[in-house]
Image (cartoon, rainbow, N blue to C red; front, top):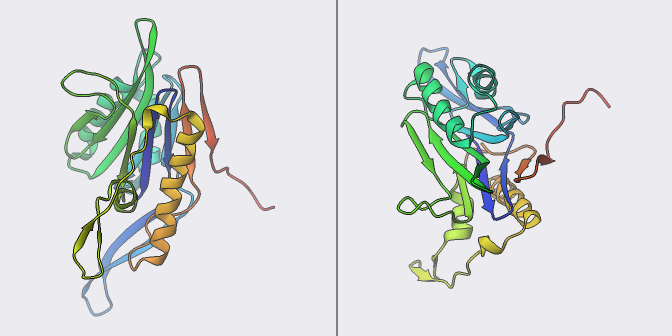
Length: 246
């Protein structure tokens, strides 16, 4: 499993993800009983990618191994074989689901796709949620009835921890019953690029740190990768590097 988040503010789209590859291995015990083992396979998986032609960001979450090969490998091949300079965030999202469904119909793999598209004289942010198995491509930063762009954040994978922090309206009182709490909004449309980067890192790292203390599978972890897309340029705010021995 994973945790990915995409923050969309007026000046940028920020995409972040963890690095843990968590596997469930099924087999037989020595006495012939079915067994299932959950294990951390790696803390160095790439889940957020920059597609350089066009300049679009993609984050992957959900089922990460398809027919024995990582989603990262499938995604890189998809880009080589299906994308060109004329593509946009919308066409990348649509093609990604179409191509993946031909190979892996029904798979529980999802993506965030984000980028800026020139509409008239303006660069307009586009952020999409895509699910291969459900054949879904949904724009996340525009109102479906009017197309009006709005700002906020979308997350996927293991969202319960950040959802509790950001969207909580009640807490458990001393009597064990839910008690309403005062909530304070995040003013997304006033958020600058650095704050969007900080929030993305906070969301991923808080998920990792909270899981450490909870009695649950530790399926989010490792370094945090952060991709920033603006109308003028795309860059990595932070990204793990391949290294040999020190």
